[in-house]
Amino acid sequence: MGQRQDWSVTACVFLFLSLASQIHCRSQILFPSHKRGVGSSGDTSHFNVIRRESVPSPKEKDLIKQLPGQPSDVTFKQYGGYVAVNEPAGRFLYYYFVEAIKPSKSTPLVIWFNGGPACSSLGGAFKELGPFRVHSDGKTLFRNPYSWNNEANVLFLETPVGTGFSYSNSPIYGKQGDKPTAEDNYMFLVNWLERFPEYKGREIYITGQSYAGHYVPQLAQIIIHRNKQTFINLRGILIGNPSLNREIQEEFGNKFMFSHGLISQQQMDNYNKFCTYDLYDWDKCKLASQKIEDQKTRLDIYNIYAPVCLNSTLSSEPKNCTTIMEVDPCSGNYLKAYLNTKEVQEAIHANTTKLPYEWTSCNKKLGWEWNKNDKYVSLTPILQELMGEGVRVMLYNGDVDLVIPFTSVVAVLKSMNLTVVKEWRPWFTGGQLGGFTEDYKGNLTFVTVKGSGHSVPTDQPIHALNIFTSFIRNTPLPQTP
Image (cartoon, rainbow, N blue to C red; front, side, top):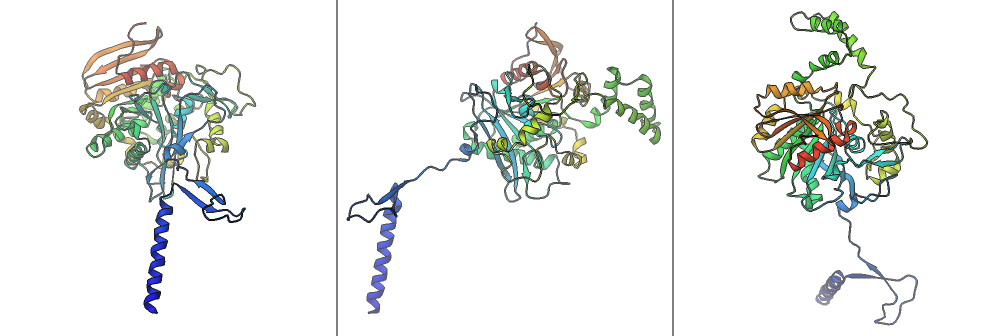
């Protein structure tokens, strides 16, 4: 009796597994209907047929169907979402990606970083080189005909964690600096390329402005060092108004103000007299410095000839005659309103974890607590290393920027003891003077941009696209009107 029971149990198990394997192999799964009675044997009309649907890939999930308020003439694809850079620690970086307007299998990939540290690259996307700008109503967008995706696929990365929509579930304040940021940026790129494998092997260029003078070379260096393990086809770096050596550069601000009539001879003399190491006087230096700082409150230090925002209130309708060429000093307020709209965040797959703070252009607290030694580190050794590895380097600078004057970048280049191969000369856009340029041995080019401040693609979008196109194509800037 016991043997028969054992055999019966075994037979039932075998029969069950056999049937289960047959069910598993079917392309359709049949479930009994609760709405109709059971029919005769062999009749499957009483079954509901449920077809398996393919699960969308992470890339497909990141596809932005349409930005709220965007113009109707958009033909290129846009993506947005999160990429883990340290999943155990809950560190995720947010990105916004726009494909080229006329893409091909050889169109390069360009990564863009804003500076800060801890300023959002969505500012670069929607105020500078991206395909759209935000209207004064904070709800609608208009096209930027000089967007860099005319020439390349452009990836905007909000870094470090704690910037914009990027976040961390582990503590970040007091722990952020150049090294962890560079590591996160590298992990982001490696993981992003897994999500977008069609860009593996493409020519890649790393670009940015301001404190991206740290981000860009440091990421490029990691790529070069690890290319034997994970190959990334890095071809060049392009940095606007770069912070490269603060110890050299910071002394040029007051000189720039004096040379442009923003402070008096007496104010300059007092600063030089009481704030030098030989005759340093704490109280008098503080007073002299404060008088200079007072003058800055009356102007836009990022472009000394630009108007300042006098009314940050959004308009009910977009302002009339809004154009790319007329810079609106309140555009940062429009972007902040736009990106903090629930509809927008849902469309771009941002703030999916419901962050306890709103999107801002810069995380000032994170910037203040940044590793102080990192802020003063010189990036010139890394630039020289990259040049030695065959990576092309271009630095450009608006000539009316007080934050990082072009003269300060010239001083950094002088400290590198470079050999000039093509002397200082003018370059042109559409017959108009764009600025001046100089080439150095080792594939380094320096460019000034006439009439531009800290954000060249905002102040001079046509010149900026000309520079970018020249860099990507590795062709000289136009030398004749």
